[in-house]
Image (cartoon, rainbow, N blue to C red):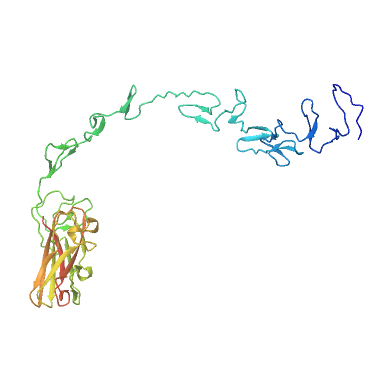
Length: 417
């Protein structure tokens, strides 16, 4: 191509060119993507790939290139996109439009238009009211200040009460009731009990509870031909009826007591149990204590004294000689009585000795009645106890018998006072 004419040198505000720009002696129009690079002073410009101080554009937060490159340096065409982030409102938050995030309040107990900068959150009131009744009145929920005043109440003294200033105390007669170190206590009853016919007090002639007295019977009965004693008197003690006996009840002590009537039965025993079957019954004893005759002589009693005696009459029949028979009392659970629990009828806390005793020794084949008496002490009056005779042998063959042609087996108890 020949030389290009028509070029002018000058300072132009713009250059309009719709065609190629050719450089150098060869009129090089460059390749796609090359830039016009200065050759420096007195050197021609050229088409070339630019190097030097041009830095790439790096993608920051929420911005990305369509190519996926982390930066843009102009070497290729690319598209710049912004990342779209969608926010979801959680509890207490609401979103208006696309970018207005604010708190969500009920505007009843809390609101977001409070004083200060930025419309601060503030409490309006509590959700429920506090209501005062009785001596204090008013309703409070925190929305407005409230002063609670206690209504002054004046008390009026009723029966048995006296008020002096701010002190309230019992109003007493100081005769039948008085104070003892600030505590009320009865001094006496308002009316006195006098001793009537055949009665007297250990001191004085009346009783009002202010001091201890003993009441005594003075006179004596003249004669009682017969007397009946009931076991469950209605007023405590034993009730008595009979010829020449005062109709009003026991009034005077007895000095003469006739038991000749055929209806009178007086037993020295509080317990009397007999086992006497029609046909002879026997127990073959072992070397372990076992209740005799299947527990037919098991008995319970309520102690009326602190000590008693228990007596057992039994028949021993030893087939071979040189045998010992041992006997003891068991409780309701067949535990030896002196170590058995009181709850099971035993006497663990009574202090009694063990009831396990040697009852008989046979030096040959022997048949004979034997007896054993136990002394039980330390009983608690009113407490129920259980006794169940138990027997064992030192070796076989050794028996006990009752009924038929043999003697009855008897268990009985009596008090010592």
